Image 1 (cartoon, one colour):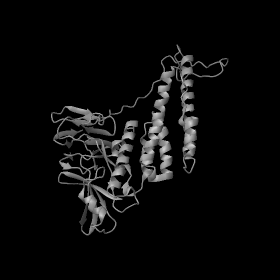
Image 2 (image 1 turned 30 degrees about the horizontal axis):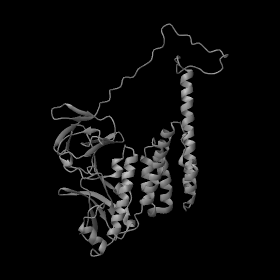
Image 3 (image 1 turned 60 degrees about the vertical axis):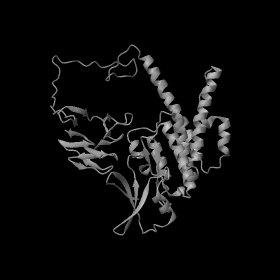
Length: 384
């Protein structure tokens, strides 16, 4: 898709260029232009220089791929997302719209961080954007792998997505999520009632659930291959932990040098004879690297840039630097490192991000040089 981010007056848009002329009086264009359809980005059809464009209003929203750059997908977020997908598909049926016209690429799915609502891009009469494979890849790349049940569900869901597509994305996917997570809760409650330790097993190893999975008419054996892979992975991790624990117990009370030679105890070890004065080593002097950061107008350091991406805003659990000011968006801007250089990027902020007085377009990156002026909303800083 040919898309770009632009700002018009006080609104930010993602603009999609259509490949050919369209009839603007057709039903889907009219119903989208009217607006008010929940879970869909407000959209309008415009003609500029005989080119047809769809303007999607993304003001005060963040696309999902940007939100999880440097973060992990947790179980609660996944549950909320699946609930919103089901509600969105029900809304499409209400307005006689097709879910095949939804763009499932995470870079075009938006979330309102204030209300936690999701918004999807709908391209009328275009069923070529069924990119659920990209959505599956996004889940696998950003998943919180410390949550075993979430990982188990995600691999199973990705396999079903490849086989069933849109028929599975929604209610079927949500039911599998509940089945796996609720089964774990039931097992935990059973352990409490019996007050006896119970060996925890994967869902695929439980007979009742295994028989239930066999009844599902799903082509392919991908989900079964996953359970074999995940079981081996857990066993390998447990073996590593046990080996490490045994090693620490054996080494208790001993200090080991890096150059110690291990082997047969009967083999004599060479003893290095030290010279009287030792060796002289040449130490090359290097200029200390200067810590980059943002400085206030008074010259006082506001913050050092030590990790990237470095996100700035006022939503405390989503940013690295909290700025409590009315002109700052919840997730306002960020500084990223590319090839050793720092770039300033606007994150679809309401009051804008400026470099040396020039406003950045939504999601636009500009290289930062020493002594550049950075303005976030009404707050001004210097980069050096």
